[in-house]
Image 1 (tube, rainbow, N blue to C red):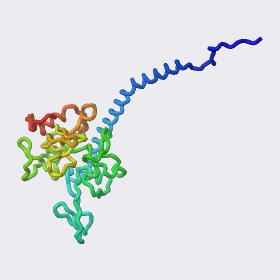
Image 2 (cartoon, rainbow, N blue to C red; image 1 turned 90 degrees about the vertical axis):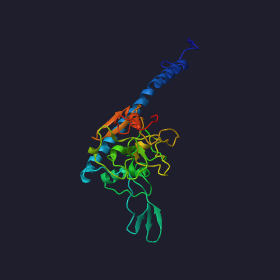
Image 3 (cartoon, helix red, strand yellow; image 1 turned 135 degrees about the vertical axis):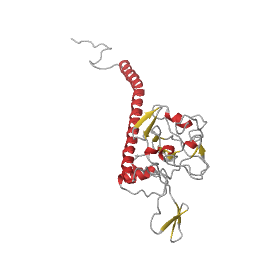
Image 4 (cartoon, helix red, strand yellow; image 1 turned 180 degrees about the vertical axis):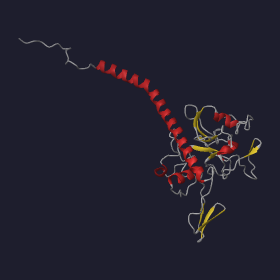
Length: 284
């Protein structure tokens, strides 16, 4: 006897189209719920990595101070001529055959890299390490992972010049903030010379440039006297720190401890030495 097969019968364990759509909808909903949490977790991991990197800088500085009699490296310096047959005069390298080459400018990052890794930094580009010009060589060590590398500015960790130079002024400088004149980036200081409330190194704004009209828009330091200068985006991002980690900035302080802070950037933008007197009238 032949048994008839119903038209709506299906194999055991098979899914209907409606069931598949329901499962896909549920998975999509779960992904949409989890994505913000995953994004926050990634951002938090980058912030933790950034803070650990600043603490690494602190260890390197402490080691450097042992051989430099307690002095920090200068925030800006010009290396010697490339070889013995070259001399430097007025920021220009000149060899015995009359050839000339513009002298590069290095900073604290180049000094620390050369000291820690015992490897000379000889790159014909200013602030090569901090800008990660030769990425395979520096390995992003001086570039914050939350921003990534860009050739627009000179990197994403910068020293805070009023603290780093120990308040050492530039003789004959016509740049002033408050009752003091701008510290000299080519003079180094000692950590005990300045207030422990001031940071040594911190997250620099991605658009941060000196912007002082002197043609020197790439540097390794943040100068409080130019906090009201617009950056490469045309806004008052100027030469200042950046609150890019959950609305806060990572800093390395004078006692070489790292800290995340949400309010210090705005305070420094107005009161560069934190003495309670506003030095710069500009929206932070």
